[in-house]
Image 1 (cartoon, chains in turn blue, brown, purple, orange):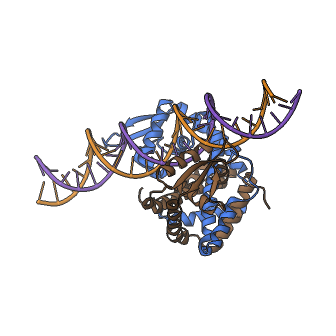
Image 2: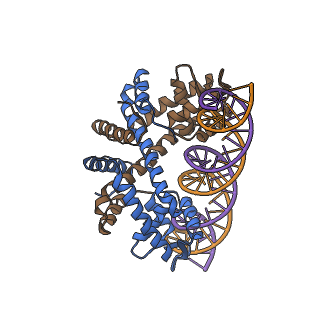
Image 3: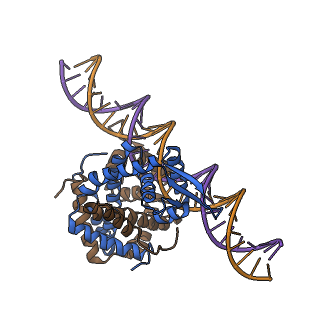
Length: 169
Length: 169
DNA sequence: TCCATACCCTTGGAAGTCCTAGTATATTGC
DNA sequence: GCAATATACTAGGACTTCCAAGGGTATGGA
């Protein structure tokens, strides 16, 4: 979506912040903007790899989550909590995956309120193939150095914990 | 959107990857997933602060970009390139900002194809107030340690450069 | 027991992103 | 000078996200 820019727009923004007397927050502003942009780049790579499988990232995430579930089925609210997205987003994803024959809804045996989602055989094999593609074409070529990966995991893990994502030690 | 989970879902995903024999890409997978989630958290914070101003992040970014432009006006394609978003996204944002009286479209003096966008007086003051709010309520409380901010800027800068965002040294 | 409260899922709407295609204007080559 | 190509913006569609509101099911206290 456009060739490389002659100058780094985030570095420019940082300088603008400093010029306007906001030097005390210029660095975190730049870091946060860089996270936004990095996410955008990574998401685009992922979507490109998933497209041939007829999957989007949102749908893949749900498929992958189900493929790791012990019982092979998960209540929708559990999926919503684990994926950290709004329940309506799960409803949306399940609608489309169900239409594609990759998952199936079934009623919960004891709680009439909850709906279970389960992988179909087709969904399970597609999840496996899509994961293999992401592993080789995105995660194996992330472009991050190994020690940078470890550092990112530590820094972002601290951040997410402070933000209330999880409580575990 | 949900209380803290008892266990870190990204750490669990990493273990699942290792269990399935994908240990060689488990760490980058986890790091990339963590970037996704961190972006989601930061975006939610930013949107919360901007909401009282009637702004979304996409609109704010455009407003801020214009407020730093020397001439006060920018062609739409320039804005698209600097914000690194699709031209149709800029059209969308300008439509809404124009309707809110914050920017105005005007024809380019010499090139009949391009449209200039310019801040109105109202847009300029709103941009200033929104930036002050973001500075004090998001960037000043990022939750990242100073040395982690510097490290993030280096790592993500390298990544973005390798991804072709910019060419500058 | 029964009513109020809490919880689960879905529908409809607003907003953002991108893509594809179309129209209008410049630029380039013959 | 004119046709072919390139560029700039916009319209429509697919997708995701969230929020607000509604209907159905559990649960707990009087």
